[in-house]
Image (cartoon, rainbow, N blue to C red; front, side, top):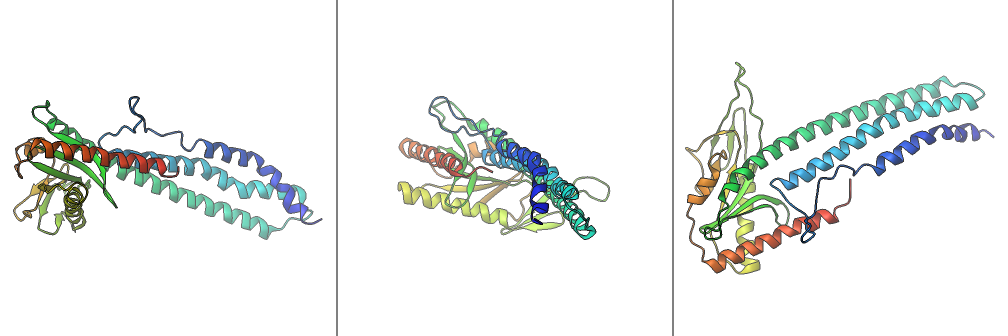
Length: 303
């Protein structure tokens, strides 16, 4: 029976199949999310969304790094089995096995390079998030001086990096990480010019960060009014860690800062004045809103 010549070599793939099962079983081994021992809620730190993305990126890197050699070896191992059971050698068939092996090796090499670059970008963004979160932590005071900082507040379609609540208003804070290009003499170019609708970096410009910050401000203002009946002052803050900010043409509705002295800036900013009852209602609303992110992450399927 000729079909046995193609079926019997599958026996040689059993060890590779077993290794694949082990790799898939261990894919979620690196999961840094932890729960509070007090209320079983997920604990969040500054940049928790990026931390979770980094965990998933490492899981993909693990899968591609472990499954790559298995996939590359599969055509060759199957071909070696065919050598034992086939009465005649077909060199065209062997060429196909070699071509499949080469294509799979190229594919997984590309995936590994992509995963590495993706992880580097996430780590850069996380470093900026942590720097801003550390600066915002300076706002925390005793109860008589109520400043609150919330991280990773989910809106309907996106996540707000930070929200600072002071007795004088609500500040929506977005963080953007950008690599600084080098000048011809090797020095980093650190200055970014702020215009009403765009950021002019050395060599390129962007509109999306300002749009996203304004979108977050609109959502926060509308959400507080719609869900809680609160009409409170909200201001957007865009943080570009490590950059020198040229604010000569900056817009009036947003603050664009480097992050240094951010806590002092927010503590001294006066958008309005919130009474104690309104202040406490906003704090409770933001705390409950932040819990939605935990529920979404629990419902998300594993990588």
